[in-house]
Amino acid sequence: MPVSADFLYTFVMPELPEVETIINGLNNLIVGQQIVRAQLLTKQLLRLNSNDFTETLFGKTIEGVKRKGKQILIELSQDRVLWVHLMMTGKLWLLSLDEPQTKFDGVIFELEPLGKKLVFYDQRRFGKVKLLKNGELSKLKEYSQLGPDSLEISKAEFVARVKTRSRMLKPLLMDQSVISGLGNIYVDESLFVAKINPKAISSKLSRQKLEGLFEAVRKVLKRAIRAGGSSIRDFSGVDGQRGYFQVEHKVYRKAGKPCPVCRTKIKRIILAQRSSHFCPRCQKR
Image 1 (spheres, rainbow, N blue to C red):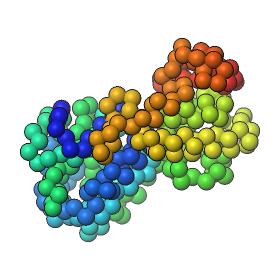
Image 2 (tube, rainbow, N blue to C red):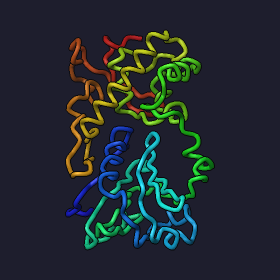
Image 3 (tube, rainbow, N blue to C red):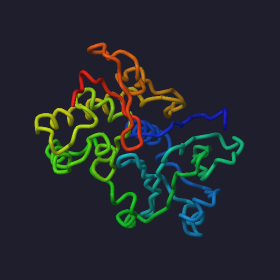
């Protein structure tokens, strides 16, 4: 693993606040930079892209970086876009050109006039980087099937999308085709703020409860973004600083500890093969 990175983006299971932190950092650093060299280094990413990947990227200017849910779009000149899905262990590092290459580097973009390289690093190699024309995004299954972004969806649409489905609430909120951007951390925290049990059935919740959940989701996500995300292990933002929202977690990974409201012990259960943390008193069924 590189140890002298100028700017490090590294985290496990990124959710909307962590991706937003990366987006903000990249927009501050690489917009306006020109790609003077590109390398695809793993078989997985070579299979995703055409043979002219390197030639097509040469000379392209980075015009902006945005996201939908947890997916990243690096907008390029001449109607091209780099679609990036970090998945579990994907990371984006901005490094000096003399930083040694590692076996986990999947893509390297050399940038001028900055004189640095943007590296997609992925230990488990589940992450994806794909060069597309802008018009091809709508045909990309992973992107086209995303539900509305958690911070862009209206209250009315949020309530409708949750209430018209009859599913256990925690797995439903983590379904990216329903609402995109939420994962384990921020669903647990949002449900605690809204005082809703993770096993509640979505269609049985009142409109008032769902409106309260909508507000809780927005509140938690915005606070997490202001804190630079949650550094559960090794996540850090554009300036190398770790996020600190983990110090504000009320229930996530707090099993056995007292609830900050009622002092009841936080409980951990498994739903849809994922851990869920909640207060059995504040979040009764």
